[in-house]
Image (tube, rainbow, N blue to C red; front, top):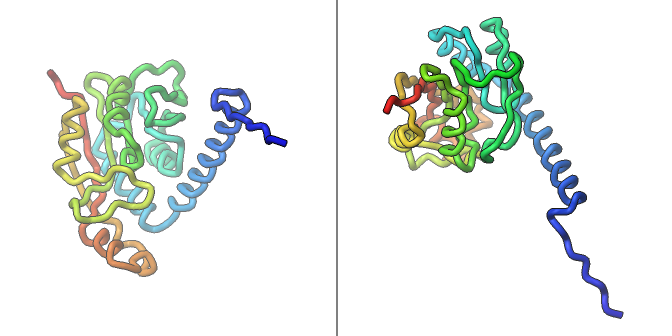
Length: 218
């Protein structure tokens, strides 16, 4: 007896439901992992440096944090006694939504893009989308690793930039850099983190960057 083939229809309601369940499960694991990592000394130090950098900025007005709410979002809210909106959805897609605490906010004075851009498949698309939400004089704060080309990428990163490529990306998105600071937090990790040649390279050559950006006037 010939076995009947069962065709899989990716557009069926069952397939869509299963895909959504898998995505939600994966996201829950990612958020749990992020929250666990956020209490490590190197992450606490990094968040403190970000808050020190933000201290130079007037943190009044509408503020958006790109990405799902996490421990850094909470730390910034606690440090400045403010409420911050966040995003939900896939940032590699053209459409994603905002969790709006102020209701019906259309544009923002400050947008924080911390350690997200290196995880995206299409950072240029994301930056162009972020521009839609920026007021004409808004500040975009990007925090991301910067490294020479010979240093290997971190696990889970799809883009890590050197100075030249990062500047070109910002320029291509119609933005301009007005302040750029760097520091290293990789040396705060325990000796267990440096088993192998590649982790040692990252310790000496990879830096964290805080970049203050505005829309480029044509």
